[in-house]
Image 1 (spheres, rainbow, N blue to C red):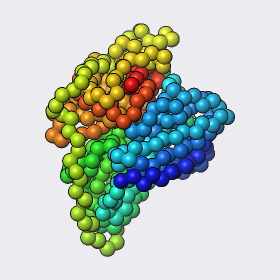
Image 2: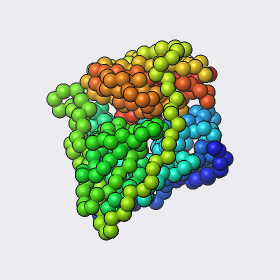
Image 3: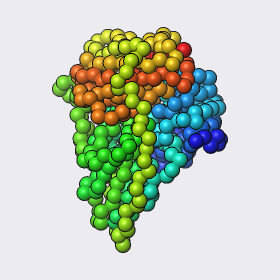
Image 4: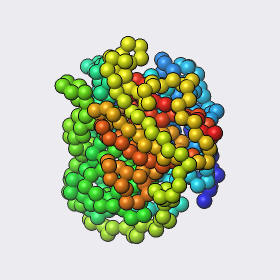
Length: 430
Ligand code: C2O
Ligand code: CU
Ligand code: CU
């Protein structure tokens, strides 16, 4: 059901002095806090954002996961906003836009990892018609960052760029290990955004009942009891957590993304994200979750076309003399080249291969992908994602309905350093 509302927002990308872990530091922000404001929308709404560039380099804006037009002043990744300039974005959500958690961040090739690592990100929530019966909802934007001794964001070394930089500090809504408080028995909905530049999260909530409602724009009809949830950079998880009395931690287990041997490894260690404290009188858990209609299932049936894409890392062939190349189908990103020409209205099956020794999270703008298999196993239910992990030496198979919008946009590795190094291609749907 469309509300047809209009949300107007001003974002001001600029260096900001903020407090992180008790220290005054300089980050980049869309407002005087990091992350930027959470934007709440309904299907059918018009979102208008005026972005002012207060940085000393060009930027632009991407609304990650939203099913909106990539053309003109829509979700156009080819826009360049010079320092001191503004740009008016306008995003019309279709009336049947999927509810879910999305996010926004800059997308100017070559600068994305630095700007996101610096602090430019925020959440977008598209609400359902019927809110879930929960005591409270939390939007938890997880990011990582490193500072130098002077309180400035530390730039990545060439090796960190190749492996994908991971920050020394993990932040939840811009804070180090915040305390999340509630009462025993309360049920909470958590919308977790992995806004880390390169770090995968393996989320666990110690000692708490923890259910997965969905990932990205996907909602399962029946919440799934889980021990952990893996989020690649760019993924979002929709969780139900029922609080048990006492204090526990929300953690990420380590994750091994692979590497290039020797010193060149991309393994993150375990870390604490937040403390969860439930005290006071116990309350009874909320009511039944609303029934969901079954999701559209593309797993069987005809497809109009099949394609194969290959994500590769090579030695000594990089652009501008770099010692490694990061490519899709042998090419580094070129905004003038169209890599995939797709007929509007068709359904395609893409097999995305990874010949390299590191995982790469594959992301497509505008059109959601239905995953047919994850980590080599067929999925039991239709699953919609906008970022899927392609494991080292492995592949994923997805089906994509190229419906609703036409235009030119991109697909890429969501390790944003790899995207900046060239692991991105151009798709034109028309
Ligand atoms: Cu979240 Cu093209 O990115
Ligand atoms: Cu995106
Ligand atoms: Cu990658």
